[in-house]
View 1 (spheres, rainbow, N blue to C red):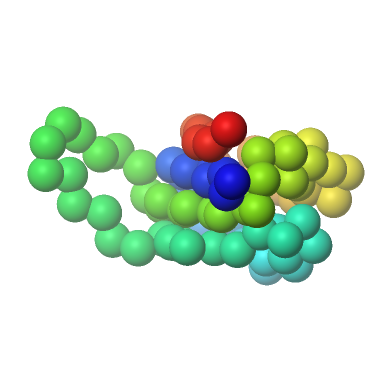
View 2 (cartoon, rainbow, N blue to C red; view 1 turned 90 degrees about the vertical axis):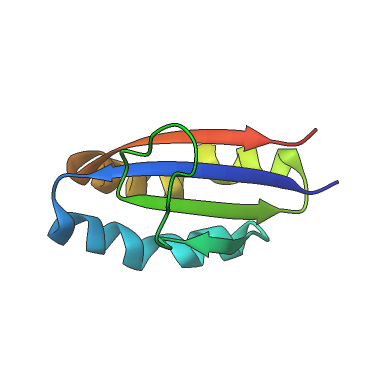
Length: 94
């Protein structure tokens, strides 16, 4: 069963965040993941939205999603992301 990673990002340094964006696609692909949404404009129809970016990733299984997130490769990229933004990652799926 597919698993999804929903990511909300508030960016405070766009130039550093660009480096993170360059590194991440290859790492996602290495774990059989794919981007379904990436940074599209978001309009809150109910409630509030106070982030700069929304990302939705799909992985074939929850285990693959977790392996990607905890991988050495992604953790290096995450270090770059942490310097440029604050993010919330939500894992959806069994």
